[in-house]
Image 1 (tube, rainbow, N blue to C red):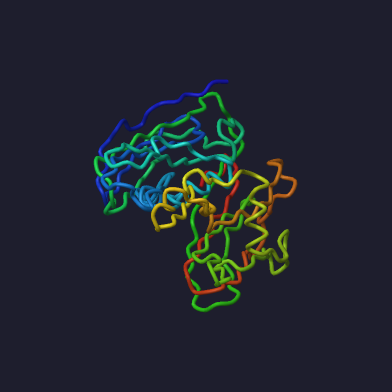
Image 2: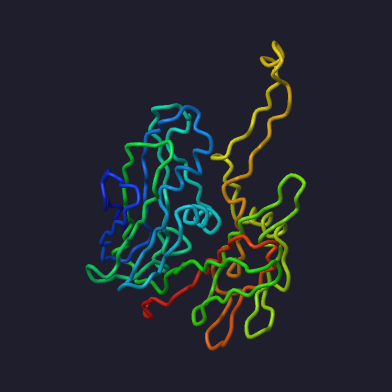
Length: 323
């Protein structure tokens, strides 16, 4: 068994607001790595992580025109963390003006990388397309370039692959709402995003609690709260705290400002607004959410406000079924 790590696009100039498509390799495909490089133009750029993450508005993998992977760049990075335990290292995080900095978007087509049993099966040239929509403008950055690399598994005969597309909802009122999830394929996980999380003096969550119902019968998650689900993500991965750093408190009266002894404040990590709702805990199908032959499948969310939320079902599709 071998894999092929190759370059699909080498240091191509990124044009803000553009949509660019690439033919993907025809061999079974494990994952795609999209690396964006840019030069920082502001000193001590505040919020640089969110600014640079926004370089990609949407990333999609299309098979014969239908999406098997579709989400924002920010979601792509956090889904890879929550689902695969992947936290990129990035390049050159000093934060000085003129620094070239690098971040990566991982697009997995299986729940483990380099997994010959679960990856996208062989295709015909032109059937499988990567499509990237770049943001506009890039605040605080210039000289943006992209590198795109792929991992093919030429000897693999995959049994299945991972399909992830985004369901976006804006509640019309606070309270319970049902988000319909796809029927027909087993679902290994749900990744949820909610705009609002608790802040100083305000204990409000867009994703207050979650239930899962199949044909109006609760399955696996009868009632699970935001706080518990968020904390339980530590069962699968460490929080991606590297990028968010911490805040230094500074006493402004001289000379005390040079001898600050107050506590540093850790910032929330990049996945602060996201939940992972796992079913197939051990990747063996024992606890997977079956939807074949069912008439209705929903995730019921108590929306604490009317801010946007997103649900990304992780469908396990048989390799012989196509999309």
